[in-house]
Length: 64
Image (cartoon, rainbow, N blue to C red; front, top):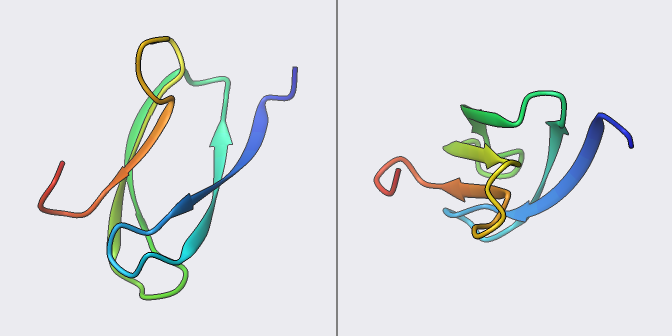
């Protein structure tokens, strides 16, 4: 299994596709990354250990 994964998500602000690089060696992560299109801060929430929810979710600054 590859420890680095590329995932395309949709920016919660502008709706454009953005590319995230996921480090699968860390199963739970939460960090801020700027949108590559509109430059607004996106909260990225990664939980690879919980099967009943999406493993990668993105939120705007008011949702998280």
